[in-house]
Image (cartoon, rainbow, N blue to C red; front, side, top):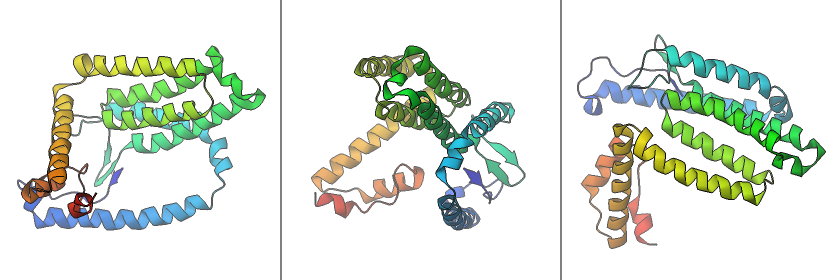
Length: 239
């Protein structure tokens, strides 16, 4: 979400650079400490207070998501506010604020009964609340964050007691949307990344199943992708 310590500038071999590795360790230690403090502070806050101020948090999130579109691209995406040695990604904080506001809106809609959410106009209000930040995140583009946010929002609507007809319609829309997005919207680099991840998962699964692990390949993908953290493959070979 926020980068505190930058990797050494103009480094041509960051993977083997000791300064870069020290910088990554520095970031990790700092954020573990900050996360622990934040967790305890958050636990002491009454969640109902957070829900009450969620409209304000939502508005601030939308403003930040619009403002970040006018920043200089980093790795091809306008997703970060860079201030000196600090880099801040507003979409990560926006997810929390938006989820709180969706919950707030749903609770207000259902004050007169759980079935109120199935009324088309009220359902459209919720969908609009979801669509505005989702569109802004896609424009950056940050498809990973957009997908996570969309799945969480969809699950919230599902557990709210929405009519089965809407669910079936949503499933059909998602299937068609994925097909259209993959073939006509996603840039080539995103398609390539998807294919690479699927290929690595498939290869790793096959190796584990056969108990023939290529440790050089495993180490390579662990270093390249945070999708593949340090894996003790011996656990899975026993399954």
